[in-house]
Amino acid sequence: MKDTYSAGRIENNSADTFPMIELSNVSKEYIVGGSQLSVLQKLSLNVAPAEFVSIIGQSGCGKTTLLHMIAGLNQPTEGQIRIRGKLVKGPGRDRGLVFQEPRLFPWATVAHNIRLGLPDRGRDEGRLWELLRLVGLQDFAQAYPRELSGGMAQRAALARALAGSPEILLLDEPLGALDAVTRLKMQDQLMKIWQEGSLTVVAVTHDIDEAIVLSTRIVVLSPRPGRIKGIIPVDLPYPRDRTALDFNVYRQELLAVLE
Image (cartoon, rainbow, N blue to C red):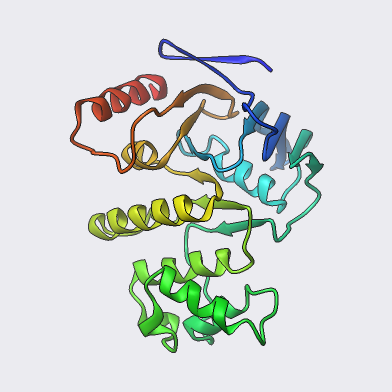
């Protein structure tokens, strides 16, 4: 597997163990207005089990497209995506996806929205309440989406994504529209869920600090067509201090790669 240079670091794309997610020369093209538009080109990356990998890059570089292909909602034009060695041909319960907006059913309560994600919707009430407690919504089980704040709605969407006990959690900027304080709280919530659940997480974000706070590795994509411009392993203990000198070193390194 090809190595990637990033601001003085060499990071090998291959995981130390058998990869949970394997991208092999993945490219994606669309036809827009009769012309061919290349969104992603020749991406190769392995994600190990229980890693937290963030993907950052300029708007339009293909971050969301890549995440949706891992989820099985879209297929590569070229190349392959494999989960535990099996070719991704469509969505599966091994992957949970949280979108930029909550996408809750407005006619259903919080409990009902989460219940829809359970494998056994009618009987698994224990799992339902476990999820409600996990995201701190046990007191809002009978509330409707219109009665929730933005942060609460995203927590409900996160619980629904976790309802099927996926091995992989895919996050498409679910915190982007939240206020600063709520966003920090949700970052802490995500970190706790990842650490306690042994999940493999791939997250799209525009927020450099968020990527450093959460990630074991950060993948930087070039402007469209998106290619891997750099991969930065984050070697800081959890929980991470945003005011620490080492944190700022990573911040400056990421800014340098993005520029």
